[in-house]
Length: 248
Image (cartoon, rainbow, N blue to C red; front, top):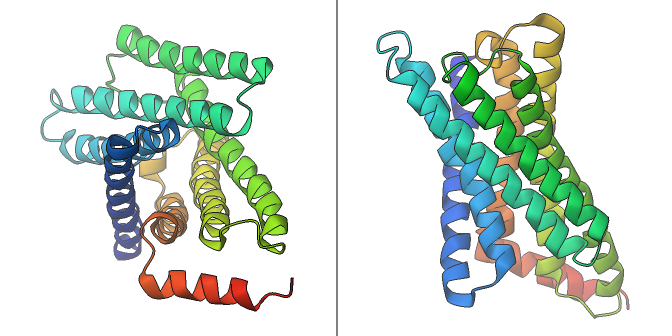
């Protein structure tokens, strides 16, 4: 089981690191806000947040004083990443909706409050205990991902109708679909973990089958992100060929 868990988590780490860096490099050239927001979101929730959490878990038994700062960095990165995804969802899908804008700022305030509460109350010694700040942070993280997934799939469906008329790029249409799948898989994996902990009181890292579930969802997210943002040439060719064969 540990091998399977390692495969999924490693794939998620590598894919999110690669995609996040590529998106930030793209932003550096284009200065377009969506690339910046998704790049920060993927890196924060993925390799930085997840990576520092894994390191902290590995060293906490032997170097207990070194683990809390690692957890603090991890949760700060996750909070920044989640807020970036919230802002992306607002600016890309609902740029003129003031209600959505306010909800995004409230979510950002909740993420900041959760992190500061951990600083004041526990110093990140037990960051995955089922506390109010843990629940707040986890639900907001799940929320940004599932909301983003729903928006991407909805927008991709609209583009697919335009594709039939020759008014959309098949690669862009597929990218929205894959982003919806990837964000949805990551969000569902986190939601399952939070739900099980709420029912059992046992953290994710202490439940082997839950680790396997999270690993599986991470693997799905990794594959979707890779095909969306680092697609092989033959994959792109196939998308364009299939689009050209569709009846008008």
